[in-house]
Length: 195
Image: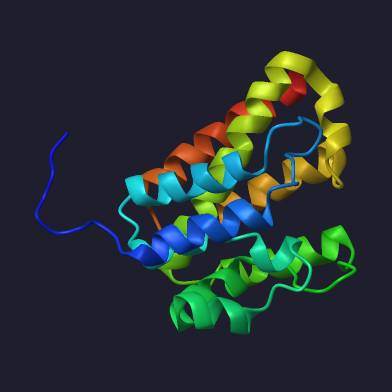
């Protein structure tokens, strides 16, 4: 380990970790019993490993905050972490409405917007989808086709969505994380076809 004289991040990241830990304390990954916080940390870590800055890491950690936490607001995020974090989290959310609009409608709207998003946002979205796709691949190996019952889109919708995410992210953007996501999604599809 190498230590520098200057901190790599500020106390804003500490506050974001505390907020996520508190807000998602009772949330679990679909059908697994795994604390949802593990996903949020993994996305944040991946964004940092692929060169994301502090704002991107905070947005990665809080990417589901507006979507999944009742009473959460963009104004609150901006007050705590600044306008850029708010914008990133809002753009990463497929809805902030309760109840949520229909699944397919939300996903199609998100995909259309994702095509034209800036690289700083695509990195976070790719990290999010990469962790999800890796989890799907692992669980497909473990429990097989019953995995798809966890998801609103079931097997067909989920496979469509992850393929469409890869296409949308690849619109005007190339990156090592996108290559990794594409390989993982291809592996999921191949395994799903065997089931």
